Every structure is written in structure tokens, then in C-alpha cells.
Image (cartoon, rainbow, N blue to C red):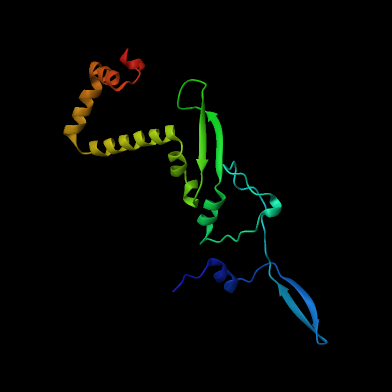
Length: 172
């Protein structure tokens, strides 16, 4: 059994607020007819598309509902490209950001972060640290081992050198 849309449920419970009617004379009798209320939104919703959009006069209205929203979004191919201050480093560099949206879920913060490479790597590191923290919880042996490693500054500095990471203030 197909699921009934929310619009149909609402129309049963609460009639629409906009009623456009006109009187029609048919065969000498006046009859009241109601016109459907149709709302059209005109806008450039593609952002900075890769392909040029057709001229306005050649565009067609697209009916959007919850069932076809992702298909319409994929067809429109919204794209944003801009530069932002790089807050991940201490210098004054700019970070190039290009965001593409093919489905509604692409607007969720997690999926936006996954489209920006430095942020994606930072989130992966955060998740690894969270996994380590959850592994340490209740595991005294592992906790002591990690404390030993963190207290041995020589070993930490060798490890940083091997990994190609810059030294921190505490290592000098």
C-alpha cells in the first residue's frame, strides 16, 4: 500500500488557505468554480554550475515533491566554489573549497566536511582519537602504556621525525 503524502493528509484535515473562485454562467445558471493554487519559484539555484544553464525563456517549471527531490537536485547540479581563510594553519593562506550537492543529505555537516580534504583528514584524526579514548576506558594496561609513551619526549620526537611531522614547543 503506497504511503499517503503529507499534503493529502493536511488537505483532509485542514482545507487550503488560498481559495480562488470565479463565477461561470453555463446555460443560464451561475456556477462557482475553484481554480487550483499553483506556486512557482523562479531562481538560479545551481550556484556556480560547471555547464552553462539554458536561457531563462528556455527553462521549464519542475514539480518538486519529497519523492523526486534528490533526482531534481542531481539534475540541477548545484555547486559552490570559493576561498576561505585557512584556520587550520597559523599562516594567512586561503583554502579553496568546492562543494557539490546531489542529494539532500549532502547538505548535512558531516557530508560537507567530507568534501573539503583538510577537514576530512582532521575529522578522521578526531575519530581515531575518540576510538583510542574509548579503548583506554577500563583498560589499565593500555592506559599505562600510553602514559609511558607520552612521557618519553625522546621517543616522541623520534616518532615525529620518522612521520615527517614538525616538532612542537614541548619537544625542544
